[in-house]
Image 1 (tube, rainbow, N blue to C red):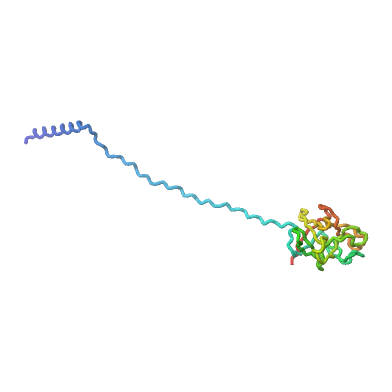
Image 2: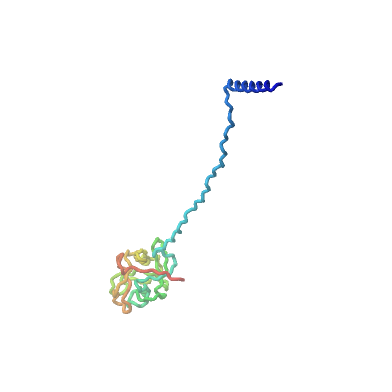
Length: 220
């Protein structure tokens, strides 16, 4: 076959192919462009939330009238202690007058707390087993309620029972359950007391400075 004939056939094939593509109206479809695959985003790891550290709850301080049954105590008016004193007041009806005769605690100024059957009320037993009590006209010329340690059974009389009241500043006042008056200090009130000027009388109103005491627990 001559070269001229081959050239003519090549031209014809090219024309026919172009005519078919144009006739069909087709456009070559390009290969799709794939979106890149993203790495997964991890949620941030949160630090654990710690519970707040709470300050410890302070232990409440017991009030001066919170006295356990059987507690040994002293009661001081200023620097002078409430004490039992036999024979300190002449011609008294009973021994065991209550006076403020010492600035140094001794066995006669130690009292044992005894709970009564009334909440907040106490009896106070001296070292000889007698109880602090109100005593009317128990020594000559007083004409008042004085205080003696002379009752052997606190439950036998309200005179030997006392209500403890918080007087503030760590002090207490003791109200007699029979008379509702407070035991207090009286200077030179017992005319037959030749030894100590300060004796105990049950006559003071609440709040009076002479009827307030500091209670101290005595270690056993």
